Length: 307
Image (cartoon, rainbow, N blue to C red; front, side, top):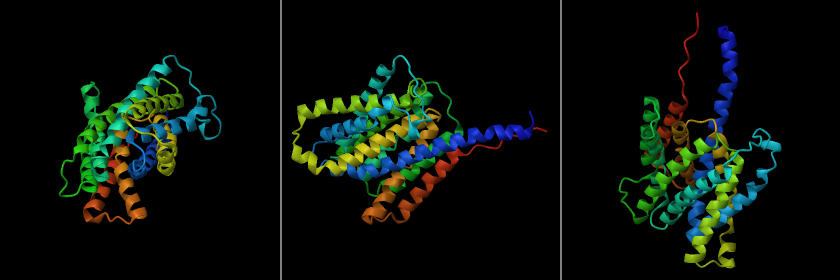
């Protein structure tokens, strides 16, 4: 095979990798915009009620994709497989724990601290991969380190202290890391869109069960929170988590974690644009480090050309 044919053959793979990275970047952008909605939603409903509402809304929105694969989903053909119900239930259970640790934790800490501590899954993913026996490149560890430093500068103020909800966020970060590894593993073996429907449904039903036992649910409260529920359900659940499952069929988990670390960047930028919050020099330096980590994670050296 000639060098020319090798280069031509590499183009589809390059385009596929770029498409995967862009999907994960869009996912991170949506997630970053959702922290504000999560806190606003709890002004009139409890944390488990909010999670149940957004999860069940997301399940309803993507539910038709269990059978229908037209339009933009034509590129994700139906992939029947045994064990998809169990896999979806497992993902849903882990998602239930992760997202509610984050949601309840927001009652006892700031959005900035929650964003940073949640972002620690960027560090935990390669650590868990290494504990599982996988090889993690030095480049990936370097990108993780840079992204972590960037998130710290971007999200945590110089005088930040450990709030009560921070410990819940830390537990959530561990569960997000587990969830990301499971998504990468299961989405290659089962239909990714069916996995999405199942995990939202399971997480929503479990959250509703807890809400019915611990919180007071009123129609008035839900109506007042409908905007935040729609934001968190339609955008974050219906679109972003579905994109995550689709994208991670072809992505290395440690690489995906670094790209998802830009969630903090998009959160800060959203506050700056919509709420006139100023990043300052410290924040912009953190944003720059996150961008650098993303570039490093995606960069691949050119293979040596054949003579």
